[in-house]
Length: 355
Image (cartoon, rainbow, N blue to C red; front, top):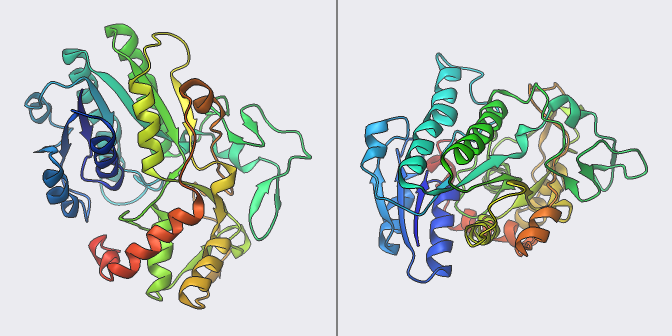
C-alpha cells in the first residue's frame, strides 16, 4: 500500500504517518509539506528516520504536486486549522481560501490522475454556529453539557453531534472552506470514480501539538499553565464552562485504516469521529486538572464574547463504530498525561510554536 499524506510535518499528519508505519506491513508513505507552520520543521527529521519519503512543496502549486509519486490513497491533513483564520491581516481571507480550498483542487486532480482514494479530514466547525449556540445546555461540574431532559435538534443525541446536524450558514470562514471541501471531494469521487471518505473530527489533541489559543487548545493550556503564562476564560460570562472533546490522532489513524480497507462502493461517505462525551472537558475543568498537576494558576475572566465562539462540541462516534468496527482507545486522562509529560520535557515548546 502506498499512502500520500499532505501536511505531513504537522501534528496530525506526522502522528498519522508514524501510526500507519507501525500498523501496516510493507506500507510506503510519502508526504508533502510547505513547512510554513511554526514548529513543523521539528518533525521532518523524525519522519525521514522512519522512512517517510518527504517532499518540500506547496499544495497551492500544481507543479509541486505534479512531481509527487503515485499512491493508492491520499490523507489530506493540510489546512489552516484555526476557526479565526481569515478574520484579520491583509489578505488573510484570501490566504485561507487558497490554503483550505484552492489547494484541495490540486489534491483532487492528483486523485483523478492516479485513481487514488481520498481520506479528507474535516471538522466539527462545519456546523451552524446559531444552531450550536441554541443547543439546550446545563452546567454540570463546571462544564456545559447537553440537557437531555430537553428536546434535542436533528443530528444531536446524548452521544454528541452527528452528520445530520445543521450546516446552515454562518459556520465561520474556516468552516465554510471545510464544508465546501467536503462537497468538492464527493463530487470528484463520483465524477472520476475514486473512493472518498470524509471524517468530521473533534478537537485533535496530544503530545507534540503546536498549541495556540485558537487551535490546539488542550496542548496550549497545559503548556501555558505550566509556564505561568496569562490565561483567560473568554466569553460565556468568563466562567470557563465552554467544553470540547479531545481526540487523539492515534485513534483517528485506526479509523482511517479501517476506511482504506473497506471495499463498500456506495452508501454513507461522511462520518463524525471524536473524543465523544466521555472525553469532553471544559476550560475550567482543564485548569483544575492543571492546578492539581502543576500548582495553582488562576485564569482571568473575560466575559466579552468573541466571534465564532460556541459553548459545547462533542462528536458522536456511533456510525463510525457501526460501519468500521472502530472504537476509541485513548481516554482523556491518558491524553492529558502525555501532553503534560511532553510539556515538562520541552520547556521551549511555546516558543517553538511562536506563541
